[in-house]
Length: 254
Image (cartoon, rainbow, N blue to C red; front, side, top):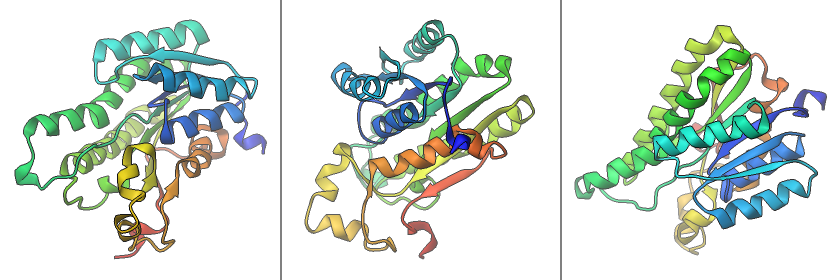
């Protein structure tokens, strides 16, 4: 179990106020890390922080809009300034609140989804990359999606953003590979969160959505926590530029 020990490590997690981000942040704390929590919802961040402090770890609450580069720069500076250093970066902020045919898509909607799911991770990596490289260690985990690996009808902007995030992951893994900084992507399948409750909670659309998933169910947000701890820890010390898919078998069944 020492392979998964994060004692003495500090993490920076975006989208930490709910869902997968909250589960990952709490799991990192459970493995021994102190965590800087970043999201727009101060209330959600406070709830995540309470879970972390209950584990005896430090939780630094940083309300910020990660679609704003100045806000991300300030959040990264605050995390480094108050924690001393950052070892683990989790770019989890993301999501899509609409499904629409491409020709019915408003381009303003495309830009909004790109900013949240791709640009936010670019801002974080650009702001914190120099710190990681200077320390010659660290693990960056970009939370992408299986929609970035396949065609995504009705979710074209979300799928394109996540595909871009996977590509960014691989590019940075190559650029930073000799420095000791690792960059990997975590790709969840259909995961039940508050953001998509209207879909998974529906007695018809819920089961229909996962009909082609071999495990025939939606993932729980906490099922992404273990893979994230693995990617953050020494257990994955020779792993970079990889896409860790956690989808109940969705992408292996045509």
